[in-house]
Image 1 (cartoon, one colour):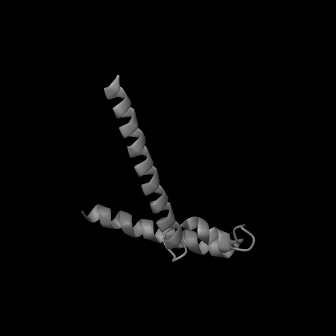
Image 2 (image 1 turned 180 degrees about the vertical axis):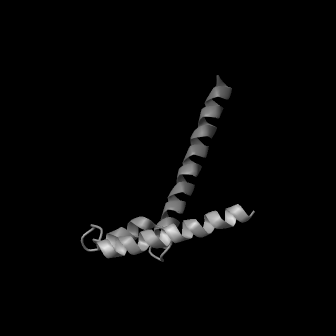
Image 3 (image 1 turned 60 degrees about the vertical axis):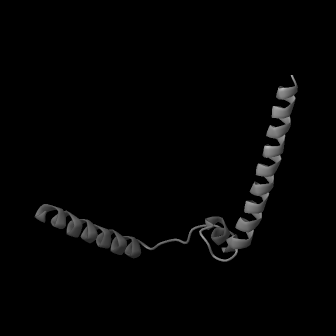
Length: 81
């Protein structure tokens, strides 16, 4: 029974250490989040409305045409191999 008590005490100690380490990591992530890392949530928080900007039909057509051209170029390169 004494060994079980020691094991439980050791596990609680390790849990406290892990929790402390997680808190340190959270603090570091918060500090680095404002530097312009990969935190996408901060980018959305900076926008005023939170909604996407509308795209004109002409812009959608240009984007679609450019994508079709990229795919055609890729497919042509695959046929040559």
